[in-house]
Image (cartoon, rainbow, N blue to C red; front, top):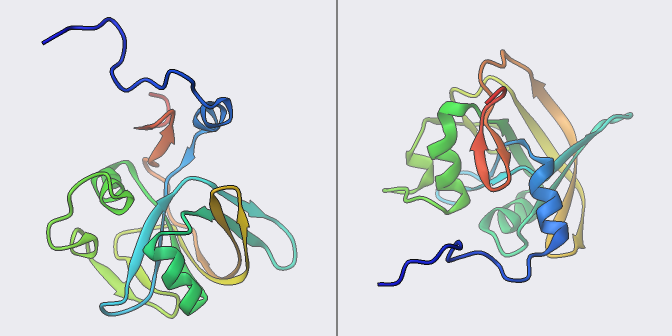
Length: 169
């Protein structure tokens, strides 16, 4: 075994745009869609709310994800703001941690007109897709809000530079 003084997975030619994006950071959202056995979900931080009449929510999703397929079929989604306590759930939906029995068994979800809603989420929105476009390596979902619930924000889950973090930490 050899011990190196550098990170073994460090990119020898880092992408500056990717590095800049990592420094922007953001609140972790969970997007879910579908019903029954045809449910899908994905964590996203590449989101933006655009005010206007109507207000819109923009999200960049992996075009090869099950969520992109399900949202494409249903035209609707539920968008949740996650809390620090949800970090294991976020990892499961991101596909970076195991989810025995499937990701939707890791917490209680209730069916809504827009898809499965995380039972304990205090802030969430039901959206419908207005348009999609391929942008870079992502699919841009432009959504219109049908329903918004804004609850207490006690300890939001943030993502910055590839790691989960908390406010003030």
